[in-house]
Length: 138
Ligand code: CMP
Image (cartoon, rainbow, N blue to C red; front, side, top):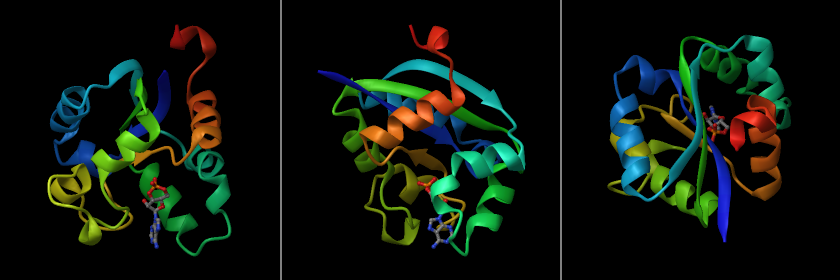
C-alpha cells in the first residue's frame, strides 16, 4: 500500500544549486510528489519542527542553519516510502553515507546534509501536518 513521507531539500543543497538534481533522484526512485513548496522558514518554525531535538547540543546551530535561506518542503508517496527515502538519502553523516546516495553526492557535513526524511510513521504524520494543510494533500 502506498505510504507518505515528508522530505526537505535543505538550505545548503538549494544554495549550492542541487535542488533539480535531488528532485530528479527522488523521481527516478519512483516517488510521486504529492505536495511541494519552496520557502524560507523562521528560526521559530525550525525550532517547532525539530522540537524532539531541543535538548541536543546541536539544536541552536541546526535551527539557525535551517532558517538561513530557502529550502524545499515536500510530501512524497510510494510503497515503503519512509524506509526507501532513508536508503536513497544515505547516513545522516555524509562521511558514513553509501556511494550513490544523495548525502554522499551532495552533503558537506553532518549538519549541512542536503536532505531530510521522516524516520517513522508517527514522525511522518507530524511533519506532514506541520507544513501542509489537508487540502494541499488531495
Ligand atoms: P535530519 O535528518 O534533518 O534530522 C536532524 C538533523 O540534525 C540532522 O538531519 C542533521 O542535520 C542534524 N544533526 C544530527 N546529528 C547532528 C550532530 N551530531 N551534529 C550536528 N547536527 C546534527
